[in-house]
Picture 1: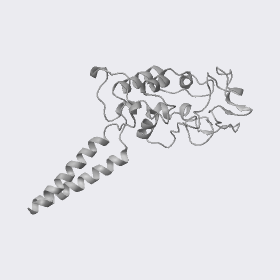
Picture 2: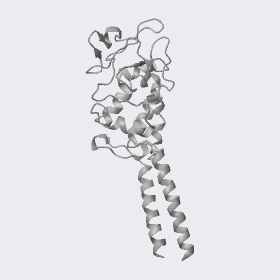
Picture 3: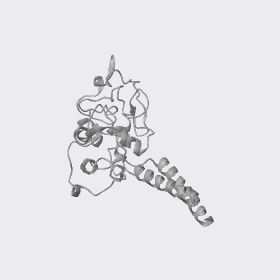
Picture 4: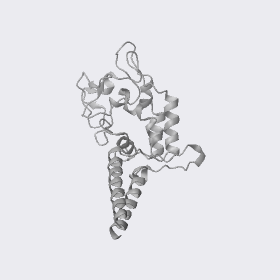
Length: 230
């Protein structure tokens, strides 16, 4: 009987752990929304489903080419290294004569595959490189909310960056010869704001959730076996 009670207690603990995994995990106080949203503003989605609805935009080449691994920007839908061998530089705007602004102006240049442009063209700085390549949805979500990784932005500032920054908006007007982000900018902005209103929950890490589910199944099996023996 004692073994059965112990197994049940462990199973209960794992159930609690599963509940914690299925909701967002706060990283810091700074990522909490600065304003409260009403419960009716957005449907409940504590499992991070609202983030998954728009993460495809962050994974699109128009975004990922500046948020990939390495100390250089990428180009094209295949993400090949910049043909001019440009480097990030101390502030994300290139080095010496190879500054981003040398070729990239405040607007796209006319013609197929000519240098694109928008104000503040550049990479994130090396102190907060904001690299998303190879990350899961959950990891990207936590990364963009973490002030140490997002240029010290709180949630309101992050949402403003995603929905209003001209550099982000360029992804929908990338110039001739480049595919724009498929999801409309209006739809993207609305989904980002619904996610914010829900408390900006992140998806669960699939691997962790699967491991916890497997452990729970084993404990429940042990509990069932002990009960039959008693």
